[in-house]
Image (tube, rainbow, N blue to C red; front, side):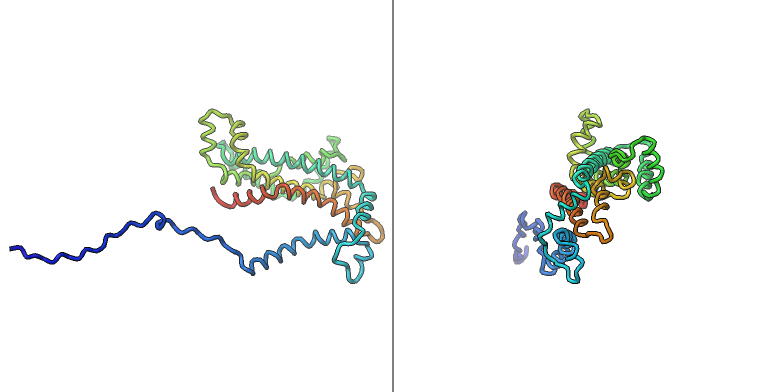
Length: 299
């Protein structure tokens, strides 16, 4: 005789969790507090004050700048000081020369660095590591050590006091090659290059159709850095050029000369020389930020 056992109380079946519950909750965006805003505002004021003070000094007289309590607001002499700066030095010609030199050097550095960076990042050839090491090692040599032999070469080529004497030595940059190599290692997948090869594309076609679109943010960052460095360069242009055919930095050294240098005239010329750099940053700012953010995130 089978004893009837009490039926055990069935537990309710576990209901499968919905897909929405299985997914991790989306992270809420971070919001800056008052301390973060205070730090950002303080940093902005610190970095923007030199530009503001240049504007203030360029619009005041030299006597006002030398007073015990200098003014902190712009004055009425800005146009007058700019006119004096244009008369004392060939600022207009210097701006054109600097624009030609900076644009040519920037184009050469960005193109050569992207080509070499692609080769070092994605191509396999004998001696690649050695060549990259030698390229990076040249960054450790102070540029002042090569001034005398470089000037002797420029004189032998009869290029002294001409713009090519400033352009040619700067068309290739070891830093640019290393920068673009590191950028393309992270931003350019190997599968894209292999897909181009499978389709029968040549290396030049792969570079033009695949590498350039991917490398555009990095090229914008490198172009901005190169343009600023070339525009602000003083040491080599003052050696290779004269005051009759100057760049902006060479022309600025002839402003406000005398027993008591007129600082307002000097800063008026500095303000003129700074505006093109700010314009370039305004045009490439979005690409620069995108390139830095993309380079900071792997893949």
